[in-house]
Amino acid sequence: MEMDILDKVKIKVKITDSKGMQAMISVDFGPFNIKGFRIRKSDYKNRRGEYLWLTPPSYVAEGRYHPMFFSEDKAFWEKLEDKIYGAFNFALMEEAVNETIKG
Image (cartoon, rainbow, N blue to C red; front, side, top):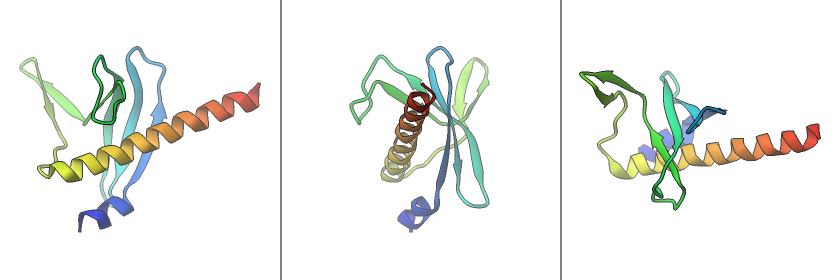
């Protein structure tokens, strides 16, 4: 069941030049589009060995961040995370190629 969902997920990546923030991500689950995932630089390696940190959309209440998207299934989250990082790396590669073509 979960792989069917992940096969249909579409990831949109907007590369940013913001301090620390590398990209804004939206995840399209068909009728549901979840915006606000962020990829930031990190001082620590993630499980993929990259100095990046993926955070789901969240809101601040009483001085604390609260996630608005959460998967209780850790394996599903890791697969979704891999798909998001893959889309991010592809977007970075596309941006580099476009810059090279522009000269």
